[in-house]
Each structure stands twice: as structure tokens, then as C-alpha cells.
Image 1 (cartoon, rainbow, N blue to C red):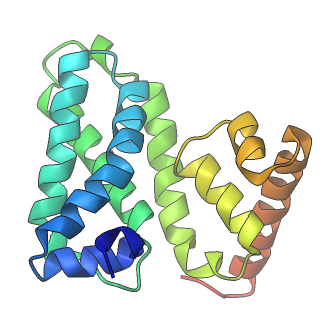
Image 2 (tube, rainbow, N blue to C red):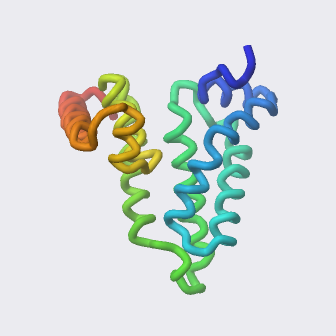
Length: 177
């Protein structure tokens, strides 16, 4: 089996054991999405590139902290969010015009909330799970999600609304945290 056929979680486990090809595949799969996520929040191209490099350095340095029962994407986005916050702290004395703080703050709260919901996501239908992940982790538009799911934007909004309602119910019943 080639690394291309493995899930992100399996690739991360192989990377922990020293398989460099596993890292290369994870990078191939997620680098564009991570860079896009950073670029939407950081206006300065050089700063965005520095943060992007830092994300993958942090991934490398913390690879042994990854646990196979955790979904990889939320874990990677947490690393990304932390790299963005670290950059803000580093540049406190500089002007903040290079970083869209409102977008970053909203993304930080969404990312944290999403990571807290990871245990109950398995309770959702596959369509709801995909829609929630695409919207809140991959930062996709309703139009992009509709194209992926082969449905209308109105239906995507309804799917996400139901998924959020289901997650609230599941949390209320003590299914997570």
C-alpha cells in the first residue's frame, strides 16, 4: 500500500515512526489549504510565508504528541492557529495592520469550538460531518460546499444548521467533553 492510499491519521502515525514519505503526503494534501487559511488572515505576503513555514516546523516538532484517535485536520488547524497567535505576540510592538485581528479572533474561537466537538462528530451523518468540516475547518463557502456535496446552497445551509442543532443536543446529553 502506498502512502497515497492512507488516511491522514495513518500517515501521521507513519511519520511518527520516521517515514518521511508520510510527511510529504500530508504536506501535499494540506499545504494549499493551510496557506490559504493563513493568507486570508495575514495581509503581508512575507509574514504569511513565515507563519506557513512555522506551522510545518511545529508539526514536525510536535509529531510525537499526536494521538491516533484524534482527527488530523483539526489538530493541524490548531497548530496553524497557534502559529498565527504566536506571530501576533511576536509583533506586539509592531503595527498590526498586517494581520486581520477580527478574522483571526473569530477563526480562533471557531477552531477551538470545533476541536471541542471532535468527540461527538462521529454521531453526525457523514454529510453533516463533511459540511461542518468544510465550513468551519477548511473555511469553504456555502457555494463550494454545495458543489462538493452536489446540492444547492440552501440545502447546505440547512444541513449545517441541522448538524449544529444535533451537536448542541449531543453535548446537552453529555456525549462529549
